[in-house]
Amino acid sequence: MAYEFITYEQDERIVTITINRPERMNSIHPPTTAELADAWNTFANDDDAWIAILTGAGSRAFSAGNDLKYTAEMSREANPPRFAPVAGGFGGITADFNCPKPMIAAVNGFALGGGCEMAMACDIIVAAEHAVLGLPEPKVGLMAGAGGVHRMPRHIPLKIAMGFMLTGKHVPAAEAHRWGLVNEVVPADELMQTARRWAEEILLCAPISVRASKEAAYGGLELPLPAALTHNFHQQRLMSGSEDLIEGPRAFAEKRTPNWKGR
Image: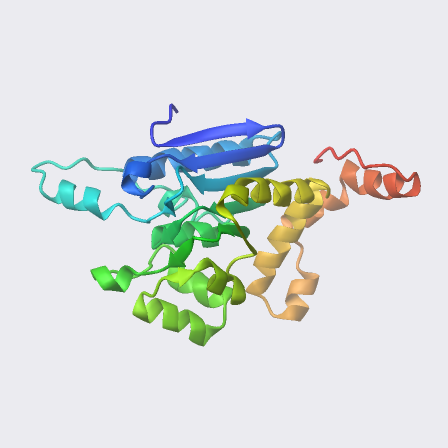
């Protein structure tokens, strides 16, 4: 698929997906979701791509969420275009629970509504100092139905999450970091290099071990602890028979950097 509303760049093992609609605050309309879904699918199926960074073009917004202006414009059309549902959910990511590869959100401005939901669907969030997150859907007669109302209470204390969601309050990056919604807050000009630093630190670990850890951590949340400890997760099974499981101890004993294969 040729991309009009996003860019997809790969530098060795790291993929950067950029929402490229700065004139609309990188808000998401159905064609953008279709492109993002294709990009996430490409990333998931590329054995040479181990980590993805999601960000937005410009400095004003990561993503302002659903493109309500586009929705209003289409409501006035006699025959508005129809778009098939995307399996991955909003932005091609909010309902995708199958990709075990790490995903990092580099929040470079407003991450509101669906933008915040996409960021929360990533595993790590790095935010610029001027960034703002939130789920303001109730202020326009909606709810954060692309996972926001479910992920927010799983990320931060329930009463804090309810306060944010019921008021539609915007949350500055520093406050989001204080509550554990964001991993790190940095000056805007350091955002992408910080996101890449996180990616490079992950790359020091065996990719199959990282994927097993991600799958087990998320999957185990829904299980009682005794059941989680004994559950046979798919990526864990792959890890147990992998070349990397042999390479790790061997490299440690030989006092050298491991040569991870991802298999």
